[in-house]
Amino acid sequence: MGIMIFMHVTPSAVKKFKSLIKAYYRRHGRDLPWRETRDPYHILLSELMLQQTQVERVIPKYHEFLGRFPNLFRLSRSRLSSVLRVWQGLGYNRRALYLKRAAEEIVSRHGGAVPRDPEVLAQLPGIGKATAGAIAAFAFNQPTAFIETNIRRVYLHFFFPRRRAVPDTALLPLIAKTLDRKNSHEWYYALMDYGAMLGAVQKGKKNPNRRSKHYTRQSRFEGSDRQLRGKIIALMLDEKQMSEKILAEKLTASTKRIKKVVASLIVEGFLDKQQKGRLGIASR
Image 1 (cartoon, rainbow, N blue to C red):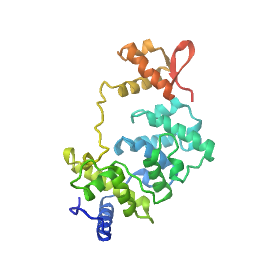
Image 2: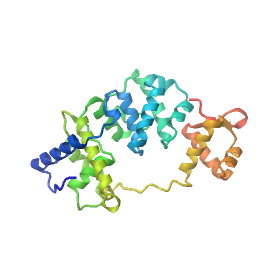
Image 3: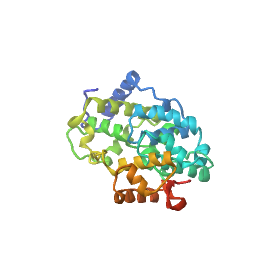
Image 4: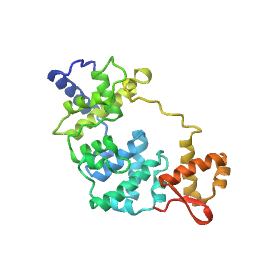
């Protein structure tokens, strides 16, 4: 795990830090399918799938999704219901909606080529700065500084061992300073693998990410509106069309609550009103 703690960011400390991370990666680097390609679409897909979902759950879905939607053009022309059906099991269906919309935008505005510029990538639906930086690094080997959960954990562990409420603005200059500008994609793989290891061995209160200013505990899932949203979408994929009243009966939820959640799903573009006022998965 490494016993060195770097209180001062000297050239010597940076060198030792990078050597430690790279040595760990040489011995314990994970063999993941999206690391075997530089195809920007494959990497974009993996990055969206990996948002808030464990690697072990993503791997089979990644292969399944590429088998059904092998390129951005196929994905952009597919029905939303088809995309959501393949996505089932990963959770956070909003990512599937964003992925389809991003594919449509890349095809219509960029000729089907995933943009190389992180600033342009960040404007795509569901991407944001961190995911844009990851895509730029992994697909195009661009030396872009970005931060995500495992990377944050590494820098908190080594450079801020006694501080609390550390903002990402304090970490990003360090990430930029220690970045391997010739081989940024492999460097970030190494950081993420070291961070994943720290997360496995430093659980609970010892988890360095608890000392981040941005640390929040995930809200309870069981019985939440988030769970109900997923149940509604899963049921609509099976039943095609349904009224709010029938939805409430099948899901044993109050009509008032169903109406509230359905309204948000309509606004976001998951559902729309179809024949005789019934609900269905949006056609786009």
